Length: 188
Length: 315
Image (cartoon, rainbow over all chains, first blue to last red; front, side, top):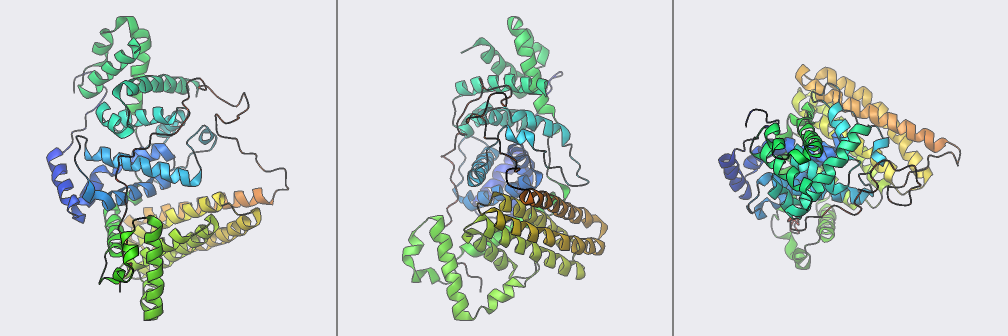
């Protein structure tokens, strides 16, 4: 990464991951457990920003990987990384969970206090909570684009694949999302 | 397409994907700088926020816990001798409802045929027992068959009780690590109980009864968890602390809900309708003109799990 670049690149261990996925598709649980360790944080972050609740995010994260295990033998490389597949599963699971509870990620959540992390937890929740509060003012698609691009570091191609949108549509959504987020952060 | 959208897109690709300095990218669009710079800065800020991580208690033993759940799932999935041959029409179906109905029916038949001895043994098992996977599967079946949120809450309270019993037994056997791993599941069960009670469609009376039972239950658990914490090694105590914290949060929320339900009618809090749905003016905040209504795009191309119908037998 060049000097002055605020983004740090995440180097994917591609050869290792390809081999692990290959073994996991053959239902080797230990290989899948290693994939779990590699992608746990990514999935958790995504689900956390969708739910705002640490315990629920942890529960859903585990559910995502259990779902992934159930369908891993049908996984195929389609030009996007394994984590894109996981995040699609995570998205579907969050949508299903909310459909069941008739909850929507909405301005109402701004009113309620975010669930604090457990005692002694190391991660900094305050800034993440502030960001989530601001994200709540955006439409679901705008939230999705910002989380996938700037939290999860996915490429636009991967995001387009996950969201089923063209890159042209993503350009528009991204612009509106950042403009709205900036406005929300300024007003909070 | 607006020039600003294109410029923003190209800039962020250059900066985030190719590592170009921000100033270099902004310098290419001097006429858009005033509008472009704040947007790039916002994107940078989102990226640089310290993002949340799973708790230490969750992370420790996460793989082991997942492997246990995988084992339980595999046990439920495998067919140990063709019992489904008795019901080939069920084996051909793929719906979730039929799968779980099949499992429940077969479990009942097995209890009737074999006297339920194995089922009882599984019920009393601890995580270090081979039958523990069966126990977890049975709990999941019960949850799946729960028709109402109230029933679900009652089941979850029972599971929380069971987790505490298991933690006590493991701690007494000197298996502090295993007890700490259970504490994570306990914290989740307790959180889910509260949510199930609150979201249940039952009348106020039923919900109040459940809340009172839940309040009493977590009070009992607090003492038990405190004793477990004293028995486990120091390094396992954070997970027990988290379980205690979840228990206290659940109790606080239950008491708050109890007080609300005991309030005279007409004084209950009126729910704010979701935005965009007949919300009175003045309650909206800032972005009604930009908000896109509608649902998230559901990614129908993803293969969702459809486990084959199989026998839930672990005898």
